[in-house]
Image 1: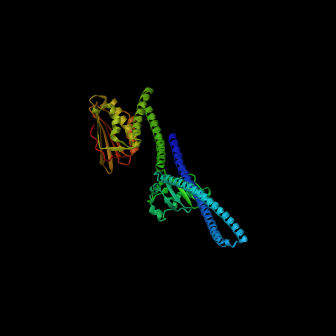
Image 2 (image 1 turned 45 degrees about the vertical axis):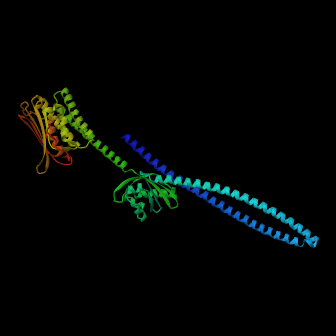
Image 3 (image 1 turned 90 degrees about the horizontal axis):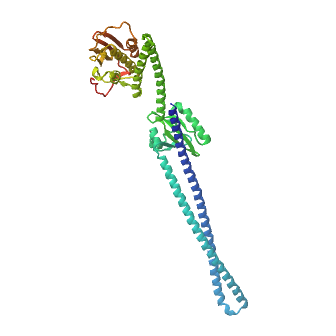
Length: 466
């Protein structure tokens, strides 16, 4: 039982670890997308600044080009009037030429600066484009990893708003709850439609935790499928936007069913241990009353305990489920040899409680036959046959018959075996028992009404005589 609890704890920790890894992967993808969006904004701003600088350079170049054309035109005009030999005009012309040369030099410097600026902007643009391409590829890889994470078959993923409307879910979750993508598209799938009434309070507590701290502690609860059946899930949610949340789900129905079976087995084991102790107590008490000496008591009591242990071994091999009647009889009479024992009857299944009582009864009959009856001589034999008969109700009729043994006489007093057979068996299954000490051999008839504890074994061939 301790190992099962440890395995359950390890399974819970493994489930929580898988959920935490999935949540961490979702946060990494979201952070990567946010960083790429910031860098794209910076790139747009740089490109806008470059465009504004280009426009300013182009406007200045156009202005200087117009000035140069005007100056050149003025110089041509001054050449036409140079013959006037006007000293003042010549000096003004000289000044104008010098200004023109300065303007041309400034225009050349401006063009060179503009070319260098264009080169710098080109390199910056290439670097920006490369970074954008790298970030885009990184985002694409992150999205691909996240998409593969959503396609995992063992972890369900749902996206929902704060009012409980499910906006998206992966195939794993849809398989768990039995709904379809059409149900999501029709906005008919809400988280509260998946919760049974008795689990609604737990769901509200988880929603309150999500609103307050942005995440929920992993918790277990039952859910409803579309067809109304139930399943167990392990849930953990996290807020990823103002009105958007993601929740990861593990189907733990098998684990819960195992825990339920384990609880039932423990209760059954406790019940059977108490019954076994009561049986041992009864065997000890009856053996003590019928024993003539301490040595006889020790021998008889030990033999009966070994017989009880054999019955438990058979039930343990069948995991305390119903056992075939022929196996039960064969286990009891097998040590006396197949040639001296005949067994025949249709396939019948006996539940553990009735099987233990029948095994003890057959053991008492076999022990008596080995000491005083047919199995005490080499020529004797025992037949055990059974059929299903219709009395007022279907009944299993078992008959024990000894033959070819020494003459039998009724005992002067009833021992433990007789009391177990005549009184214990009817109390166990509500049937009838008749034990006859016929001179030709002991005969015992046992009638057991068919029920869930004693029933025909379906899809089996009838047992042939052994």
